[in-house]
Length: 311
Length: 267
Image (cartoon, rainbow over all chains, first blue to last red):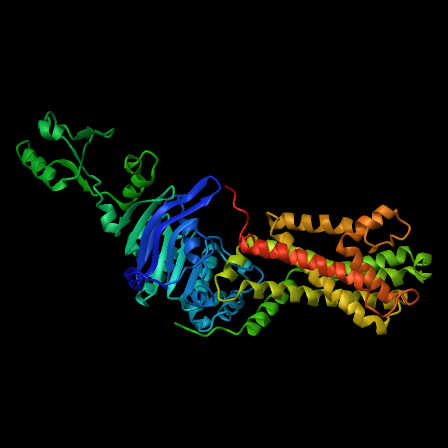
């Protein structure tokens, strides 16, 4: 079996991946790779192609074109060896309501050659006190935690988490984040899909943004944040003091009466603004400097008419 | 890399236990597969209490209806149970869940068939027991092997049909409607509730194209102390085998296309 050097250090390699449903191209030619031991996030709005991509990587769908290697094999043809090494949190909660938490976990543990002890998993997902409860009686957060436990029950090297914290309350999300971060500490590779920018900033080593089946950005959360987006500087102008021409061209008056400057060179603008302010009475009222958030970048990249359209 | 897997016989036993447990916890499934055929037998037996069937050698109606209802029990456990539980498991994403584990999908499908077989056996035994107790139905012990052969083949046939049909229904709700919408009309023209002997020839010809009538007639032949015998009716068994093969082929094609894993995608 031919492998590229990439395949040896990467848990996932995707090249030229396409998937078509009738006339719709859900995934329109994407390339990325996930290194062993990292948390990699796939971002994008509904319908961007995230779940289709993940399902191809999980071996549940076949690509229309392109090359996919997961743990060194083609997932569409992979057999039981592959399944022993991969864990999956499905987007729709696939559980039997009539079983108890413990029965569910023990049942799926019995499918693997070398499962993690189910008692430890129950403890890890904080469901020990609910072990005898029927799945139908669990809260949304408890179900999601049980699904996470099922993804880990086979002691996988690679875990697919498709929107793992959707529907969780803030406390449960924090707990899930800690759990996911702990998985990386164990040396597992994680592919995460999410709508939540704070989740990606907190967890992901690298992320890629999908829009209409295409990749529109890739990098670490910090790199994505720094993708040429402008920092906003806001302040209230001293009464009767017009800005010098060079700054006035950049400035905009906001409805609340403050002045806003959007700039890609905030340090330089601040130096000029500071020098000017010193000559006009000193401190600027309500001065703030706001760097772009990952959410701003995400919205710009994924909104119709955003930067992705101009490329 | 871990080379070892859980041996498939152990996985099969695990999955059979799993499906039996789910069945025990589903009152609807337990009622419709276990209790319904017995209730139908008691009802039709009561309505035809003093009736003898001249076209079947003058046997009492219950002697005809008991193997008919046993056939119904087998079709119900095979077709209805497999179709509805598979459609429900697919709708809930449980087929994908199973696919994500080292358990081969065929192990799960075989486990569902074995579970259906256990239900069919229990249900058919309950029907025969009820017939013997309530209506003095004679159990032909010498014909039991050929009855079991026909029943077993019938179960495989109807379970395969249920599995194949499940690939074409969109939702679990519609699976119930499809299962009964197909099964019930077929049962009425298949010598299950009433003998078709006096019916129009064209109706018998149409009904004979489907497997239900062949299963019913094979069992009724085994149970008829006057006109029947202990030998298997090969023509009936051949029809059941042909339908089983066709359904297995359709089911295999559906499996290859991924129809069992998830609902047809709305574009």
